[in-house]
Length: 437
Image (tube, rainbow, N blue to C red; front, side):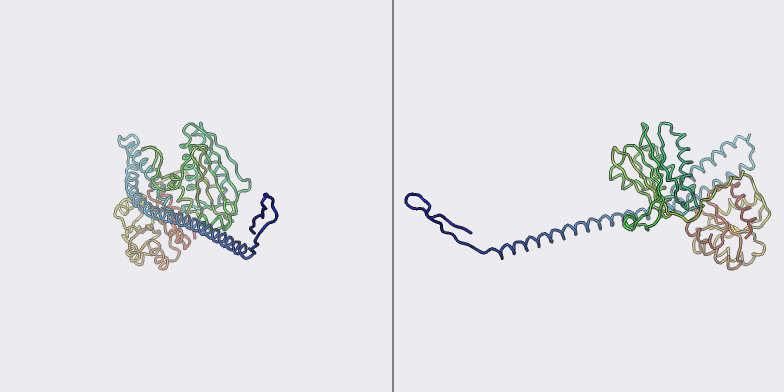
């Protein structure tokens, strides 16, 4: 509507002139346009959110693939290094057997063994990151392991306050207790180093049902998990550091104050147990490392007493299978020192040929897992076909890998990880030979 007044010569309003226009259709058109624009903006926002989510998932996948590739490399390095350490350890063990404590070289030989142990600890962390597999799995009450490890750590760090809030009826998990204890100690140590002036570490366990949405965020299956939280009041981390914290050899500490393998090892060990580890952190507000371990239906097992170290001997015949000359030489010397008769095979193929020829006189086969052409699993399968139920001790520079777990289920009797000394070796051999099937 629009209009104007009629005014006479005296300035008085005498009337008005106006026009009227029907705008119903115009308003309707404007409303339709507005609604269309609203839907368009809504679609744009939804597309932006979807693209952001896609970018986040792609980033997580790329990170997981990178960690997998680095893990494979780390595992190969650790395996080769453990074989070298085995050569050093074996010769040192043999020399110590013939050396009196009063000899001027005795302490030097003991130091060599000590350095081998330190080297093996380093490769164990690499193998942990490489997800080289679990070594000795048993159903466990994780609360008991946390109480034990936190008390042990607390005695060495008096300046820190350690608190625990543990789920009373915690679900059982199937773990390698030694490896998970290593993870916990690495997390405690990491927390302590983030609090150089002292502080508090809060350790908490919970039973959790991970739903489908939560599981998709971390590429894991939904289901029942036990969570372990290790939270500190330290300096915290920025986002850039958080993205790299689980990479091997990445460290924020100065040279000489750490290898950068602790958290990488923790990441690999937890992953090998079918779980995952995450971190929440902010500069100035500390860090919270959260572990998720899948639940087991089995009941926890009580720990067995540790047997006293002793040198066990025998007179049986042993088939030794390894593709590395240094391994064959040193292990043969160790077996001879223990009074065993030894038959050597430099490959899986040669082992099969020798076994077919001398199976009636062979009491035990010591089998390396990683060999070219015919690996440990293939060799074991063929040996088992020739003589079902044969006694086998698997030996490897890796920890007990998924492949070794499979042949264990097929009937392999035991496993020993390189490097090992003659005492542990002698005990393992008797354990397998005296085992009844």
